[in-house]
Image 1: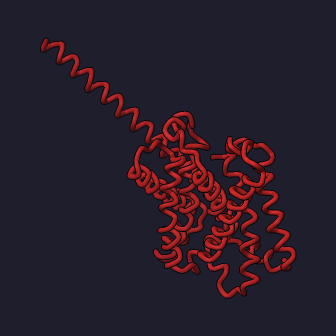
Image 2 (image 1 turned 90 degrees about the vertical axis):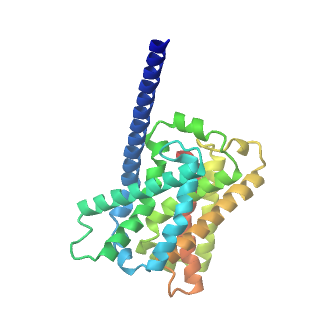
Image 3 (image 1 turned 45 degrees about the horizontal axis):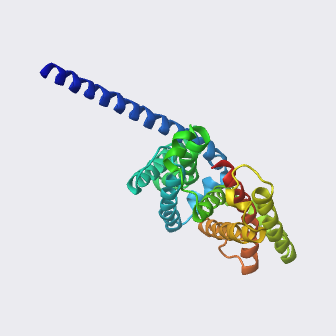
Length: 291
């Protein structure tokens, strides 16, 4: 009996060691995918000069507010599609923290490789530049599971999380990411200054049409299952119109954060928000295709 007990205890310890090794390997693979996702999603902005200059001109208060408001967003994104399975709010918070740290390290390394961090820059400028770049990079870190990993296990953990507010959040993810890529550029303001009032209204209408047709009328992959059953007007109001409102709100917040609305008149500010809302709305509509 004693020998059998020792053999059973030995097999139990061995199985635990094997399970721990598998868990560590899975976490390492998740971190690798997260780093790859951070680099892939962050490269367009890491090589954008306007993002480099924002570290010098952007208010420290606005940067801190952006990061503070962005962390709950990352937690919610982890709840939907993190780079490793999570089972509680604490897990999602840790997942979000790790994703931001991965985005920070990835941004730091890429900026160093590109020579975008000069030896004459102060610590405040370096931290500001890397912290800002880490925001979109951390989104890529969390989306790495759905884009680069095996989604079957993730689907088992997150199955049944579909719902109206989940749909809206996924749209917000797409809107934020695509808008973040163009909000710092000068072209947004240049386009806004060229458009008249009638053209801005036409752009808004065209954005709604494109947004609705892009996913909810063209029957693309990722379309929510209830859209075929619901009346067209219901889908348009609940998803397209609300999704466009989300795109407008996020566009206004990003433009304000980056100082693009400072000193602008109300008509110019509204026009600038409408211009940025066009790519934001496309990102919102396309989010279901990639998440």
